[in-house]
Image (cartoon, rainbow, N blue to C red):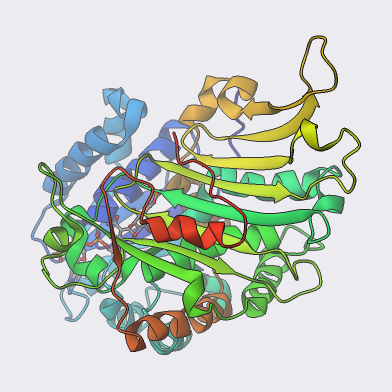
Length: 484
Ligand code: NDP
Ligand code: BG6
């Protein structure tokens, strides 16, 4: 299967924070891969901007090295890399000072699409936005891209929205949640709304419960300082898992367009019931003989921040009343595995008798790795000896069904950056959506603080603390196994 490349208009993209980790690991490698895929028009330019004193040649070397390290197989083509780097420029700039701004003004071409990626700490958003206007660099058609975390609670998210709104319209603001750029996450919408098969069953009459798992094997590593102030609730649940939940639970929008999709997502978030204390389990990984504990990684021997969360939530609306959603995410778990499991109810009447056992259809949407979908169906066990039933998977691993190139498909940042250039906000969070997500998250986090809740320890390489299993067991259910 050969993927089609949809051309975009020529652009100038300024990456503020162009010397930072995100720029080197994600943004530039993504742009380079789009260049190799012939999606970056020849006269487009990418301008890195930061305080470090580089000239253009030095900066191109830094970016070239980063692309070689993080750009995957495409980065092996030296000729292409050289061509791409010729389109990369640098300007030494201080977001809080006056240096460099008139140079930047002379570099950004107003007759092209221009986008400004704020790949810097949120404290710099206001000075960047102000200076872009003071120096007449941004116009009413410019786009700005901002990264997570978008605030750490409702108040700070409102403040950030306020700061950006002073200088930009909502249509110009692209708030990134990179999970929305993942191939299979978009496939959730394709599966639900492109097939007639699932939608009639997609409600509490037929769905017993839904499980969303994002399990990681990595710890917090060098990001302990940031992570310890956030924890899994703010770092993962408030954004990535919440987005997955929205895509699974939302009503069909009348059109696949930015506001159609985002209006429906906001309705889901607003219909989420508060999480009661006994429906949330938090955990922290413990040290092994060879590996540090969460507290070691965080640099705080008394830290109560969670590296694992499992919770049960309910959506108060006509479609989902009575169908719980179980969310689980954690670091240093048994395997890297992200999936959504839609567990259907039992058939209404067991015509094969008790001895045939309990059989349930489960639709598993596998986000990473090994992207694909599996539908568990019940069939007769082959052979004589009566009607014995077994469950078999109808398996559609995308790499097998569509060819190995899907494994090398565009990564989330490639797709999202190209959507910015195209002016398509469908896969970006709207301001009210982020605020609604914090409005639901804040009381959960506050409750944890008020209860002086201590996270349960769990073994590195396990499935999290035992209490997470109890959360399910109490409801007569169980988590699916975490496996790659
Ligand atoms: P880094 O600390 O690695 O980079 C910060 C960048 O900001 C550097 O390029 C730094 O360059 C620049 N900078 C700092 N102060 C100024 C200033 N006064 N004027 C101009 N430039 C300045 O951060 P990351 O790249 O990791 O993160 C950037 C943003 O992306 C953050 O908001 C982060 O939360 C978010 N993010 C990061 C992820 C990641 O994987 N790294 C993942 C998801 C979100 P210099 O010192 O040269 O000025
Ligand atoms: C980031 C979180 O947003 O997503 C990290 O800050 C997490 O803590 C990462 O590890 C997971 O992303 P992915 O794409 O590796 O699943």
